[in-house]
Amino acid sequence: MAILFDARGNEFIGQLDVITGSTNTDARASSANLGALNAEALVDLNGHATLMVDIRGVFTATSVFEGTIDGTNYFTLMGYNVTTATYVIGVTALAQIALNCAGYRRLRVRCSAFTSGTIVVTMRATTADYTSIIERIPATLGVTVTAASGVAATLTLPAPGAGMFQYVDWIRIEKFATAVLTPAAAPVLVTSTNMPGNMTHNFAADAAAQGTLMDKSINGSMPIRASAANTAITVVCPATTGIIWRVNASYRIGA
Image 1: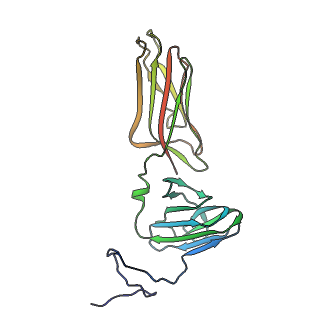
Image 2: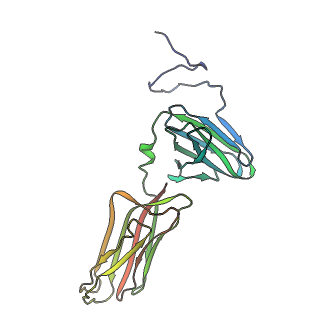
Image 3: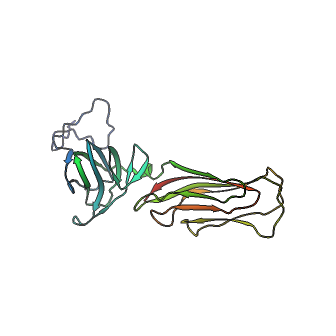
């Protein structure tokens, strides 16, 4: 049967699997060297869904990822660093980045800050969809806080950076009695900031023996996104006589 070749002499294999020994002999340059402020590497897109970016070299500089729909106006894009399992809007060191480019006319890597050296940028676009992987990454960050008996405890998820949000997978709040507790008419309130609705959680003020542990867990099938970008999330446990507070949280960073 006839064998089809592309314009550069590579055998066209359509959607067939690539097997051991297959090689491409494309003479086009796949890399660009960026060595000045606002230097850029461009790739035009035509029905592609994912752009992979490899950044190498020795440099003191920052690379950002930008896209355009009309071919003129560019805006910042969030990329997924496949080696660190984190979302980023720019990098200052070697990195391998996946970007969702479906619907864009062109994407670019631009040197937004430059001191010295050369950034070697290699880009390759594909019709394959990578979002099913990068949108289901595991939580990679965690915070814990413990206070002394009778002392308030505040758990803080640090501000993640410009344009970024914390995605909270779960929070566990523990209330441990260091003495015999007597009942009270009002509950003990644990408050939060920069979470949807700034949730408040009730802990019963029941009679309890010394050594009693009470806890609440906040989790669900989907993570909770912070209300505001680049803003800390806090969970505040009030100073309560005879109580040690401990709070743990697991979260990730994203757009």
